Image 1 (cartoon, rainbow, N blue to C red):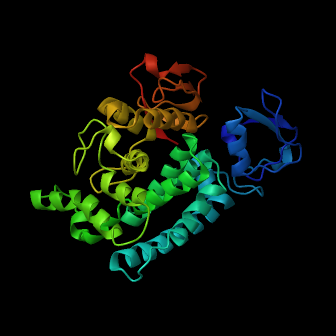
Image 2: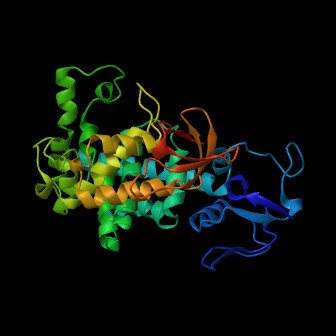
Length: 359
């Protein structure tokens, strides 16, 4: 029997003793086999180490199988991730076909149930933490409009869940995320994927995707929230957005949710001119740009939960030290407390250090 930290667990290990939270909840029983889902459950219940059957701990190069050096590698090689990746790719193909049918008006009706089905299934059988773990490890995809739309749909659904919306409104938020960028399908790829600076004409064409999206959706008998999510997701509560410089009470709540999810996914995805930004850097940027740009309740809910989502993750700091996030303060979501590999406890709000990368 050996005590193993949760961050070092590998799917396939077997629990020697039951894992119990501080509140007395039995999270896993003796004899249970470790999976990515159970690792997530342990993390969510603030269990930091468990006892493992010695014979189930794989040795490097031994019969126990390959040992993966980082949590990200363990996730990518887990059955759960491989199945999620397969379903995610199938969802992208399905949504791509359906969105192109909408743009080309191949049907007189817009099948919202069909459009929602696969993204909803991706979200329903995973915890919030698992979804972000999966998306974080799918960042090698080219950031096409379709992939971005799936990500924004999932994140919008999570924000609606965090905000305690009804199930029907959570589904509506997912739908709004799926079709929010449908206007971009009318813009040539030469502009959408252009690596250099856009010309004034090209930039105007990109900004017009919100109006183009509304016009496409206005051909169908669907909820106004869906049309307005396409039209308003670049509006900002302080009036600095586009296309109409609307203010807070003029922007629909679904558009407000999608705007947050859209910015988060755009900044944590790779671009032709930069790599993906660390989620903690994105939280910093959103705070620095001014929280007044977003709906107060929604942005605070998002930032508080987003920081906590990465609790117990291994990270690299800006001074190259590595460690584990052990606490996230509600009022400082981008400045967690990190326990470094040599045992130091560093509160990032008291230093100039930042989280550079989630490992």
